Length: 138
Image (tube, rainbow, N blue to C red):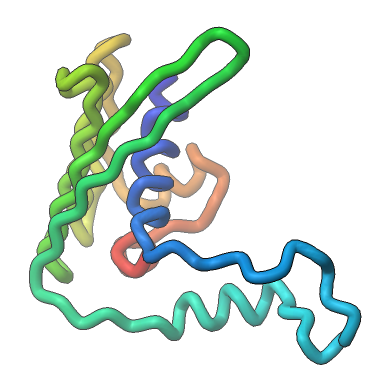
């Protein structure tokens, strides 16, 4: 559960972008118009937004068969200093994360679990290479 909520927090960080408009749902027939995943990733990291502070509010709705859940998140970023993420369900804070250049702290209220550590142990725990710069860019 705690891993899932933390991954959800990371998704909120990376999903608060402007919406892209789908023009044509058919696959392109001309190979010159096909975009590779490497090019998408490279272009993503080339997008540089200059800010000193950033405030993001997001919401998501999860549905599976007859079960549904609405989740909202609040992200506050002070560039090169800290990222604070709060996740709420029904207006009640269920998880918080404080991400700084040196450490990551996470608290999940439902199971009372928490994580305090550096990026090396977090990367090992999530199975992906993370650092503050990568998280701040998404």
